[in-house]
Image (cartoon, rainbow, N blue to C red; front, top):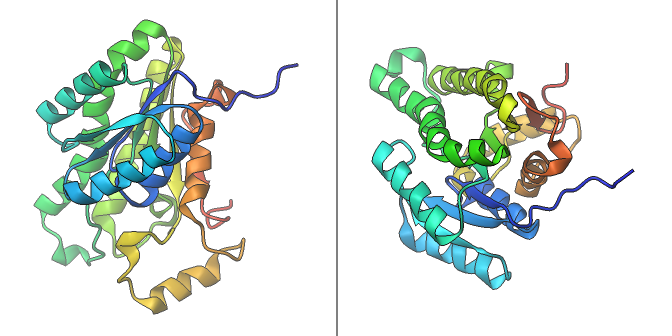
Length: 254
């Protein structure tokens, strides 16, 4: 009996929104497992370049690519550029996210709802469609959507984000069935509230209230999500598809 293979040598991974936060941790974890990693950012070029330089100093292979993940032309151009520079995308991690304000429904308008759907339904569609021809040709691929515990917990007042995450989950489950005959898995990782840079100004009383609810009695850290991504991207998870793995210390048990 062979030991599980968690290595990603020879694979090319694209992680969207990977210049900071959870996306950065996932990209570093995939690189440490042997993948050539394409970092993606849409804004703040200086920050993205610092992140990628840190990655290169660690002796890891990859490239840095600017593209809006909700713009069809930019997505297609990025996937083509990655194929030229690193090789075609084998592992697609959909991590890019916009600002996520909590508001009562009366304070949202439809344009904000649409912006959430663009990031969490349109973006997976565009990126998967661009990467899929190669995955189908080689009959191997990994698509990993970063979802959220908020859908299962019904967090409020957060209806636009929660609804869009529900759409992302439904899309992923359907795609898992559609792509299974090509040995392409489609899975999800649902992080809990794991404080990263964008949480620096969140109210402390809200952080404290959430922290008290975590059954494992500690905050999650970005590396917790990175480990789950490496597992789902690897051959060790070859028979796992359509699943939403919650990385939140037990917040959604049951």
